[in-house]
Image: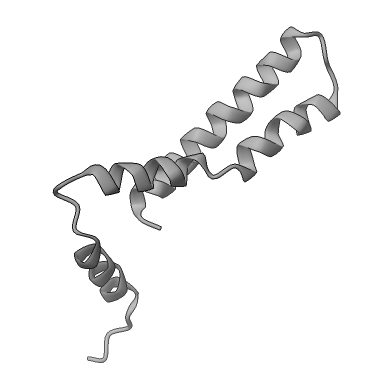
Length: 80
């Protein structure tokens, strides 16, 4: 999981959940149950991750091994 996917997951969750909740309110369904049914797909559907994977696969400048090495270097504790 890269930084782009973390950013996109938050945005897509809000868009999907908000859209479904607005649609439920438009149809006159008010209450906690329609809101929870609208929020659940936004939280559990990995749209942001899939968009991030597609962007990184089609980007010719993206270097996956270099990105993995950099993320591992940041996580490794310093021995000095």
